[in-house]
Image (cartoon, rainbow, N blue to C red; front, side, top):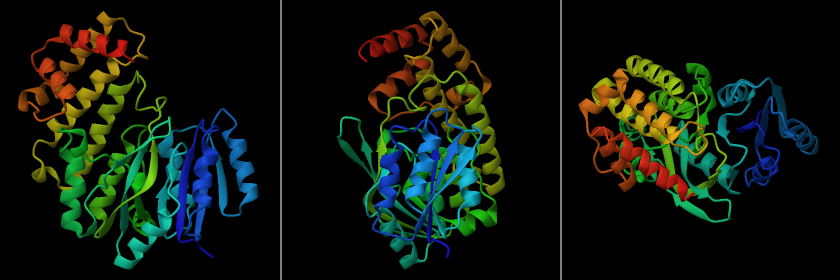
Length: 342
C-alpha cells in the first residue's frame, strides 16, 4: 500500500539533532506516512544512526549516497517517494505533532495542489518566535498564487524582513504527481528552495493556507546561511541564470519589470554581509576591496543605477545608503564595530 505522505529529510552532519527530527515525524497524529532519510555522504555517524532508526520502525527508509549537496539529496528523495504528497523536513528542525494531519486535511478537503502553514523560529536557548504563513488563511487560485507567491519571490526582494517572502519549502505540502509530471528538480546548493517554489507554483492551480504554526525552524549559528561562503558570488551568478530561465519560460517579466535589479540588490546586500562575516579570513582592507569589486560588476552597477531601495530595516537601509554613496571605508568600520559586539 502506498502512503499518503512521504517525508523527505536530507541528512548531513546531523548526528546530534537527527533523532529529534525523526521523533517529531514518528509521533505525528497522522499515521499514513513514510519517512525517507537521505544520507548525503555524511562523514560523521549520521548514516549509521539512520540505519539504526530504520530498524525500529518500518515506515523509515534509508538511502545512502555520495555527498552531492542538499539539492541532490532532496531529488533522490523525490525519486524514491511513494506518497501522494511530499513534505520536506531539515534534519535540525522538527514538526509539531499535528503538522501532517493539519496539512493533509487542508489539502484534501479543499482539493488543492498544496497546503501551507505558519512556523516557529526556534532558538538554541529554547525560546520560539512565531512567523506568519506565506499568505493569510484561505484557499487561492492560480492567479492569486502567481501574485502572492511567484511574483513576490521573483521581484519583491527588498523591504522589511517581515515583508519578504522566504523560499521555505518545508512549510508546504506538495503534490507528488504534479512534481513528477512537470519534472521538477532542485538545483544548486544555495537559494535552491526559492527556485523550486517559484517553478512549482507556476504550475499549481490551487493552494490552501492555515495560520497554524506547524514547524520549528532552528536558528542554527552553524547554518550554511550564517557562515562565510567563499564562492558566494559564483553561486549567486548561477542562481540568477536559473532564475532568468524561469522568467523567460513562464513570461514573468511583465509582472515585475525590475525583478532583475531588485534581485541583484538583494544579492548585493547578502554579498556584503558575507564579505564581512566573522569567518572570512581576509584583512579589513581585503574585505573592502572585495566589496568594491562586487559593486563594479555590470549587474550590480545596473541595479544600483536603476533603483535606490527605501523602507528597509534600519541596518539594511544604512548599508544601502553607504553603498550608493560609495562610502566603503565607513561600511567597513560599521561591520567591524558590529562584529566586535558578537
